[in-house]
Every structure is written in C-alpha cells, then in structure tokens.
Length: 235
Image (tube, rainbow, N blue to C red; front, side, top):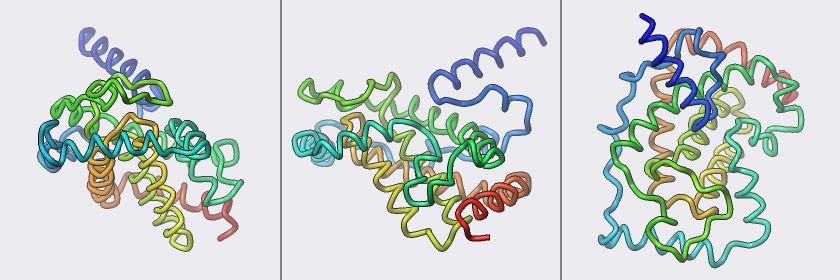
C-alpha cells in the first residue's frame, strides 16, 4: 500500500511539472480512466522523416519560421500557456479564472483527464521535435522536453473548444477559429509539425466524444456552463 501511494505521488509530481495538472484534483473521481481512450490505436503514425509527407511537414515548420511576423511571434509566445482562459479574446473579458471559480476547477479536471492520454501516445510514437531534426529550426519558446506527436497543446485547444462551443453555441465559430490559432501557434513557435497539430485535433475530438457521454462529467459541465454563460452575458 505504501509503495502504491509513493508511485501515485511520483506520477502526480510528473503530471504537474510536465502538463500543469493540479495535484489537488487527485482525490476527486477522474473523468476518464487510462483505458477510456487509446490514442495509440486511433491516431495514424506520424510521417517518417525521409517520406514525402515528413519532408513537407519539416518544410512547413521552416516556412512558418521564416515568415512569422512580430505579431505572430507574440501570439505564439502567449499561447504557450496552457489555459482555457486563452479563449477570453473571443468569449469576453469576463472569461477569467478569478471571475469563474467553478469553470476554472472544471477545466483543470478536463486537463487532468486528457493529459495522460496524450503522454501515452507521445511515448509510443516518440517523434522527435522539429528543432531536434533540423538545427536551422529555432524555437521562440522554451523547448518542450517530451516527444512531438500528437501535440499536447493542440489536443487541449480542441478539447476545450468543443466543450466551450457546446456551452456557447452562439460563439461556436469564433471558438473553433481560436482553437485553430492556438494549435497552429505551435508550428509558428517551431516546436511542432502540422501533422502533430492535426493529430491533436483528432485526439481532442475523440476525448470529448467520451467525456460528453459521461454522467459525472456532464453534471460538472452543467454547473460550469451556467457560470460561463452568465459571464458572457448570455444567461
């Protein structure tokens, strides 16, 4: 029992440092079990470096690096933060953690649910980051230590975008557009390939398909939805 507790604490420390998962969520019932979504069996393998698709993927990163504007650099650097409140620019100024404590806690739990699933896929596919493949690639944010495929930021972006679009169907188009920018900024930042981003979009969609059919998740979702709609002036 003592060994199991120690291993659990080690895992929590790892998730906190790598994924920003809040250890305070450990005593709560998880929205997803590790077996709920097996991304390894769902996602196509990433392109190999010597394939036409792999070379095109690398070229896309180099092109984004060469052509990024100062505004795009600032956007990509700001979007390095993993937070649902990055969507405030399309939802409204009231969409912030201080104003929405139920929502903040809810999306922390969503993050805690999806992050280990992405990590398992990253470990399996083990795709090197673009800056490890070509020394000409210079990231404009801190170099992530884990593998490249699928993109964790992109998975998070689309996971929360789908949930937010269900909460705020009036703003669905803007929310999905913002998720696209959030995800593409990983290419702009030179830390992901386009294929990683697309895999993240698929992963987020699959994860939400499970979450949106879970009674425990839906009970918390309704509470957060009410709070979000009120803050957006839609309730």
